[in-house]
Structures are given as structure tokens and as C-alpha cells.
Image (cartoon, rainbow, N blue to C red; front, side):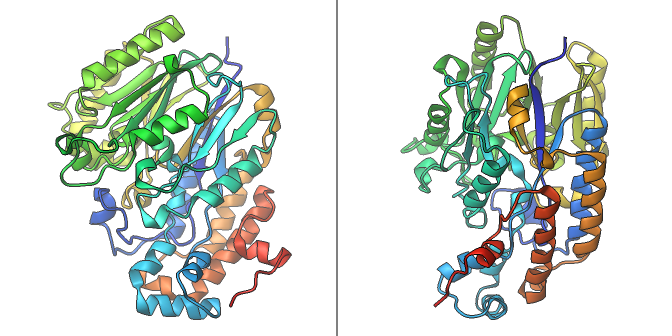
Amino acid sequence: MLDQAEEINFDGLVGPTHNYSGLSYGNIASMEHGKLISNPKKAALQGLAKMYKLFSLGIKQAVLPPQERPFIPVLRSLGYDGAEDQIIRQVGKDSPSLLMSCSSAASMWAANAATISPSLDSQDHKVHFTPANLMSKFHRSFEAPATSLVLRRIFDNPTYFAHHYPLPTHPDFADEGAANHTRLCQRYDQPGIQLFVFGRRINQNPDQLPKRFPARQTDEASKAVARLHRLSPKQVIFAQQSPEAIDAGVFHNDVVAVGNQNVFFYHEQAYIDTPQVIEKMRIAFIEQCQTNPHLIMVPAKQVPLQEAVKTYLFNSQLVTLPDQTMALIAPQECQESQIVSRFLQELLARGDHPIKQVIHQDVRESMQNGGGPACLRLRVVLMPKEKAAMNPSVLLTEELYQQLTKWVEKHYRDHLTPQDLADPKLLIEGRHALDELTQILQLGPLYPFQMQRIMPIPHR
């Protein structure tokens, strides 16, 4: 019997200012590729190709619009005055790093947009949305209001959807969204368990913290989201990333683990006391789902942590196909690595789990900036009435895919350096593109420049 509930993958469209500024300390790929020349057009088309691949496999796919960049409101809040072209030129002269931060296209990585819990798990039987505050990184810290607006536009029926404010923007409640959250269940139309992963606690012993890179998500943030989503303690597990993993470049849990339905695919060194975490998950899953999960560990001796980070093996998407088998949508870097490719071949040969195929996808423009296939998507499980209540215009169809492809080819540059961000023409180009996009997606005015047409905002 087919599941009544469906999981929809919401992918973030790559924005027109996709560039390599190396802003994300702790994200090795981002740091290594800083200041390279990017190709926004190619990046957006690669993202669309991945969406279309899932759509062609029979998986429900949807799109999230990019945020407006460069983001002038933040620059004005920091004291820059005058016409927008003057502001961009002045910031480019005064503080190129600030302009880079306010031009980041990082909202493309929708896995950080929010944490979402389905109605099947929530005690009030609503789908719960909490946008991530992303306060650990300045260039992402002002995404939450726009994320919240988009989610409310798509899921705007209070009968079925509960929207929460982002957590307070304080280091004690640093929240990185679904990149540190995994839901397991036997089937999408049945209740499941939810794993929340954090990197640090308030006032934690320094010996349990990473030494090289900062831990982003806090235990306190994860527990706050679980409370907001009205989750039963019996269905929730909290686990701490191993400091060694973070120092190896595992800035989010989705760089070292991925789960889908009854399968959890993880690295041996993912957590502090990984065997204990996995045993808790196994027991909770059995109690909730009345059956055993498939817990697939990748030993460090077969795939060292550094190779897992380099290839983003665990940042693959694990998806259920219409025939109820699973596929791993992996970055092509996994195919290019002898170590990872060999492991995946052995995994498929085992046959004692639902993963029956590995599909390699080219998202190299995103990978070089530190995000693989799973970073680009946000998972939403909906019951039929909930799906009927959402805005269907964002669901990918053949027609929408063709529209978006033409839109990218029309508006995006194929060459962008960090220095190009100081070109005021880029702002105008981006706004023309976003203006057209909101019409394609039928989401109404979303961006500050569109709002000002309705109600002009005076500037001093």
C-alpha cells in the first residue's frame, strides 16, 4: 500500500549573486575555494537539474526562491546612506568583506532554512515550522525573516500549519535548521522519531568541545525547537557531534549522517559515543514503529572522516522511490573518489537494506562553496489535506522546470568574482530576475524592493 503522506523536497534556487567569498569558517570547501571565479548561471542550472532528476524519478519536488542580494537594508542599518548604487560602491571601497557578506547567496542551502516536524509527530497534529536564526555566521544571520515570509506564503492555512518565530539571536540558542535534524519512520504516513544533533551546550566542559573549528548548533536550541513543535519526549533523541568530526569539517550533522524512513546512514565517528546514540535510536524506533530500523554504519577504516567531508558522501539525499526502494542521490565527487566509490559498490552488493541504487549528480558549483545535494533541500512531510492546503505553484512540473531554466539563462551571469559584487548593475539585474520569479511562482511581493512599491519607506 502506498503511503498516504508524501515527502516533498523543497530545493533552494541558487541566487544571481552566487560567488566564492570563503565566508563560512569551519566549512573546508568554502574556505578552500574563497576568491575563485564562480558561475551563477551554471550553479542555478545544476541545482535545477538535480530537482528535475528527482522529479523524473517520481519524487515530489518543489522550489524555494532565493533571497535578495546584495541586501541593502542591512547596509542601511549599519549606517550607510544615500542612493543604493552609491551605498554599494562605498561599501565595496570601505569594507569588501561586508559587501561579500551582504551579497551571499547562501540561502540556496535550504537545509538550513528551518526545522520542520510533520503533523503525525506533533501533539497538536499540525505541521510545525521554525526558521533557523543562523546567528553563528553573519552572512546568514539576516535570512530568517525572508525565510519565514516565504514559508508562510506557501503554507498559509492555520488549520494545518503552525509557524514559529526564529529562536532568540543569542549564542546560547544558535540554530542551524534541518541540517542538524533527522526524522525516521517506518512509512511517511506513520509517526516516527526525530534526532536533533548539536555541537555544544551552555557552559560545557572545554574538553568536550572542538579545538579547531567552532561548534554551531546548541543543545538548548535543539530542545527549544522540540518543545515548540510539541514533540513527545519518547519520540525525540538529542545527540552531540564529536569534536573530532567538527574539527575535520563536519559543521552540520548532514555532513556525517543522513536518514530516510527506516534507514539511517552514518559515519562511525559522527557523535560523542556513537554506539550509545545509535542504540537509543534503535530502541526508540522499535518502541514507536514496532519494527527494527536499518542502521548502516560507515567504518572510519573504510572511509576516513576527511574523505567523507571531501566527497560529501553523507550530504547525499536518501530518497524513497515509487517502488518503495531507496536511492542515494550523491555528488559526483563520490564517484571520483576510489575510496568512496568502492564503499558504495560494496554497500549495494550487500542487499540487506532498502538502498538499491546510487545516482551521482553534478552540483560542483555548490560543492565548491561547501554544500552538496542534501544542503540544497528542505524536507516536508504532508498528509493529503495538508498538501491540498499549500500553495501548489512551487511544485515542480515539466512546465515549471522549463520556465525556470529559461529564466536562469535570461537573467544570470556566467562569470562572477568577489570584486564584481561592487557593481551596482548586479543589484538591478538581480531585482529584474526576482521580480519575474515571484510572478512565475505566484508568491506575490516577497522582497523589500517590491514592498517599497506598495508602501515606500523613507530613508534619512
